[in-house]
Image 1 (cartoon, protein in one colour):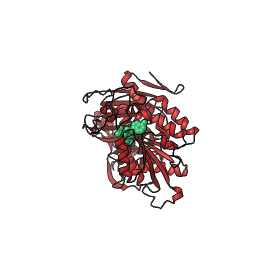
Image 2 (cartoon, protein in one colour):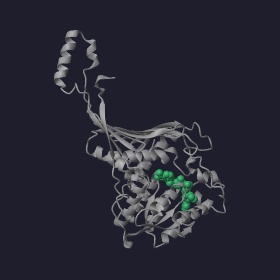
Image 3 (cartoon, rainbow, N blue to C red):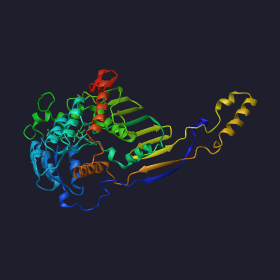
Length: 436
Ligand SMILES: NC(=O)c1ccc[n+]([C@@H]2O[C@H](COP(=O)([O-])OP(=O)(O)OC[C@H]3O[C@@H](n4cnc5c(N)ncnc54)[C@H](O)[C@@H]3O)[C@@H](O)[C@H]2O)c1
């Protein structure tokens, strides 16, 4: 071991207090109830619906899905005969509805968010906020023009664990941060989006033409319906599906609210050759004005999800939801091994001087390592939804508005641009577009 590496010895664990959803046990008066409609009751939408109706003072009034089976599911989840439809405009026309949860695939986000804002409904929109770069600026315009609340659904900014990491950075305990990284890996068909197809799906119970939306018109294809992440026509590959979460967490912790200046990427489609047109390994290096971020996702090996923020003052690591802060003081804690290459007299002089100049050298770097975890059963998605509904009620800003969501989405589009065009993607702020 290098003499100066030091040793972090003690460790303590702190269980963090949830801050929003769990803290609010107070009853909500009927006048403060928030009524929402949901558009898209699929894999993510059904979970959001279950969670949202469990929040105090929140009620689901209607559900929209282009596949009739999902309308039936919405009724099963809510346990009541809510209004259901294939036409989301009906939810926007409904005066009883205050806000919308939009859990449709990426290629529908732009239009639904703009339509919601123009109909004066607040909206919780799933990540990635956009399917293409220009869309985000139109969505922000709609949010601001209509004074609406838009919350983007990458839930890490509502997590108490991420909030603690951000606090450590804000207090300067980590010192200057120049590098962060986010890593994630899966190794199973479900993780690689080979989801089972709905057994009864047909053009009779699904409005296929509307589902295609802006995508090229193709014949009814159940795989495209359920495994849409595999095609750029609907999704944004590994970057928009997973790197977006890693980046959202890092941006939130280090206080970045802007696109990267450039992105370089590599990877490939090595394993899941099922007709998809996106990679299953994607590694990206992003340069920001004062920071570099490295992000890597593989669908070919299970690896623990890890986010690391590296500063002169130490290392912050979030691994499987637990934050560990290992302080470092960045000083030499022992004499340099190079002194061993000098003759005795010079070596002794150096060692004596080193000891005089470094009074702390004898007790190796006794820094306390602290681990922070959320309580058992904690859900950052619940907190994120609560943050949204609370903002609908109070008009306070949300933790992840359209501007923030747009910046992480732009980074993901740059990651794809760099990969597909085999180039360095550069952000051109004046034209709000990617060059390179
Ligand atoms: N935050 C997270 O952790 C997380 C996790 C999973 C998915 N997501 C996001 O949630 C979104 C949905 O993903 P999913 O896996 O649930 O997809 P899904 O295909 O399982 O469900 C989407 C549903 O939307 C419906 N739909 C599509 N277009 C519609 C329209 N115009 N009007 C009404 N209904 C429409 C479909 O019929 C389908 O039932 C995506 O943006 C995805 O990235 C987020």
